[in-house]
Image 1: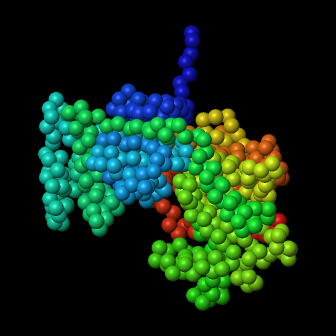
Image 2 (image 1 turned 60 degrees about the vertical axis):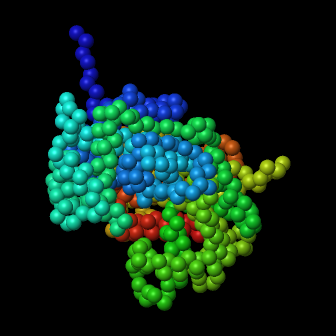
Image 3 (image 1 turned 90 degrees about the horizontal axis):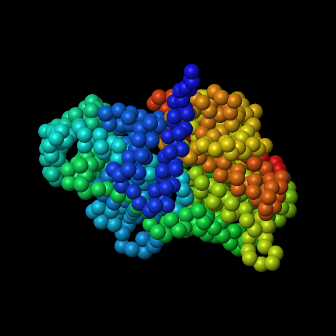
Length: 560
């Protein structure tokens, strides 16, 4: 008798992720799809089977409020009102009269073309497309939930709660009593308590649009209702230029050439260069903050106190003072114009005046002093596109200039599988989710570098995922407990390492013994309920690990 082996949840989830990405690639090549068409249903079914942690109760009848907040922070304001969503390349909309809409948690230009259409510029590669389509699929699922709850079966009529919500939103301004009544009706529509709805309402409310949450729910339901009743379909399209340009490193090449031309103009191209992928403040502050703010903070002030003050949104004047001090001591800022949304800072250590910096340097000739090139965080596959282009020789002469890259240092946020927010992960290898691709390397950093600082430190393998919003506990538990020994997940490690290895081992465009450092701090723990990315940001919890990693990287650079 033949026995059948049941698939585990981890295997089902892996298959669901694979189906999502195969479907997304097919739809991109095809050029369009309808959320309620066959392809759109395939995306929704795969996402419902996967049930990612970040989307909480997506598979239940009640609305998922944390997931909704997370998604709408990463999509343009007003997208819930648009029947047509068009993903485009950089096609010159910036030259039009239309002002771009930039989501608060994703740097992408979006344009509201008219009442029904939103265009979203894709300049950061396939990862950006996967991210958007996943979030849109979540929105469509939530939209259908609302439709099912408000539409009376076998009729074109809606329940009383929906009628009351629609009536409330026709008023120019709601009184406190009217607002609370509207929220009670909304709570019934969403299958949530009034208390839960009130909290989310407050999070969405702005001075210009206090009833934003109510309008979001109304429009999500309205478009789904119209599709059900009148047959007016929603559609996602991909522009011809986007399909033609994707994968050709167009934006990455412009970005890299702009930086190399700046280095060349300042006679820095042939100096030893150290790349740091980080944010736009930690390296600058680590180098100069204490010296720049000597009047504001006592000599015995803790560095962490200074860094936390600088991270506070109200201390603009302090940040400007540090920036001005840095610019007087060799810092060059390059604001991105390529479309990658990756800004850059270059620090010429030969121009740092005596006593202006918080670190000590060896006495070496100026032409041997390190140049520190800090790039803002890349997004997924964009990491390969940008670093691969930067590591190529500069110029098109018979003898192009090889760049003397001494080290590449990657600091980033990642999901941790053991420990909590703010703890550290030091990878010894990266593996690429969904493939057998693995990238072991010698990490110049180790756990011992971060001991006795009150943070847990984990060493092991990191998995580079296709999208953080597609992970669930079953897959992550498998990675963590199997012989892969995975300690965390992130989106860029494999892509950086792929570019570094090809440049150093195959193309020989940089030195073969280039030093590589990776360190991550935990932004979330997706294995813990309530600790996913949808539960909120790090706040000041991230300040200590950020500057601890930055300090170790800088000390390595100055001691090499």
